[in-house]
Length: 126
Length: 126
Length: 126
Length: 126
Image 1: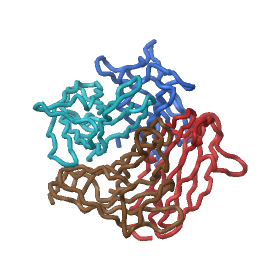
Image 2 (image 1 turned 180 degrees about the horizontal axis):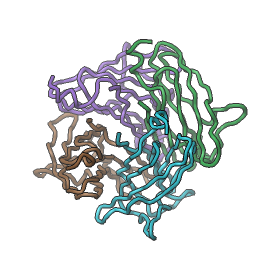
Image 3 (image 1 turned 135 degrees about the vertical axis):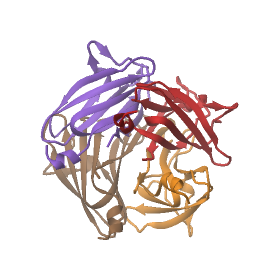
Image 4 (image 1 turned 60 degrees about the vertical axis):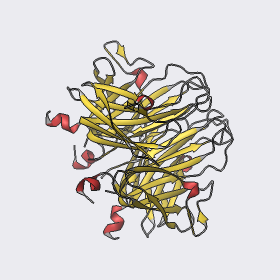
């Protein structure tokens, strides 16, 4: 891994405000995505840890991401040992990567027929 | 507290745009949340100071947060000596923590039957 | 000004995406705000420079902000020598301050009866 | 180029969550913009590289930006050798500039008659 690759992102990102809206009533379905960009030539291994308000975290759910590709990961699809993130519950995420990546988080809330959107660049630990 | 813990966040965060929408007309109620993630093993003590346009701040409202947990704190529920944040008034927040945490702020505006959402990662002082 | 004061923010902030929606059709009026937090004990002097796509900037519009106060500045109210920011035109802003502050930018778009919101922490030059 | 100019931004920015909504049903058309601010006195040359989930990137689409101007670039208008970004497909962007600039990304989703907005400051590599 070259010095240039190292510079294109971080290995550890945080998203404190996670929430999968429990309902959808419009044309689109409520969902959230962790959008990861891997500018490196090689595949990277991603580990998502999910924190809750009232119970222990789900640790290190694995996702693979090819080199020079992006992946928009639906949080509702994350799963480990049969456990997944429940709808309608506040949570937070740690996104770890073996190679440096850039992470953005977006939510589409379609609880009402009219959509609402929010997005943040994750918080990197440098 | 280990060096690793120290790295996972900051002790002081700022959110300049606070505003609790005074009305709700849809299925959901207008609200704001400060979403805090504590990756440390130990509980942290959080102090929220609220700044206004035309009067002195409300200083250091206390909130506790367990280790390896997140808390999505409704700003309308913050209270000190009977004082709370009034609805429909611009304000700003300082979020201090005894252990390093990560802070995100989100607002759901349900003034109209259709929701609007906004979110930012707080601004850390490094 | 103490070292502690110096640490609580930056002197120079940027917001590349400014746009005052030309229409409002709902209960609220479309608008944008620059939300500034001054944690210092003393008043700070703010200078907003407005950049456009096709003409020279409006330079250093002055705004005052008291110590330990926030101000949510409507961009439509900014004015210098009779010049103001026109509606419906893409622009960008530089926010300079004599003391360190924290800057967030938010837009409420009420073009439709249902609102849309967006917000970013400004980009500080460190 | 002076040291002062060098400080006003970065040469390399990332936006992991790109998506051009395929439909518009309201008064406004769904679109995304990369908003770039060039505070330098001289013109800068911008190169946008577009990453996808399942195929190689479109490399270095060129855009010019005059000195002391902003440009709000519609991503749907980016084009190289007849290739452009398809609607309804997740993608990510790298924004490179010969002079330091500041980059913000915003999306207006008008899939529903009521708009939704989201915005982030791009992620700079420092």
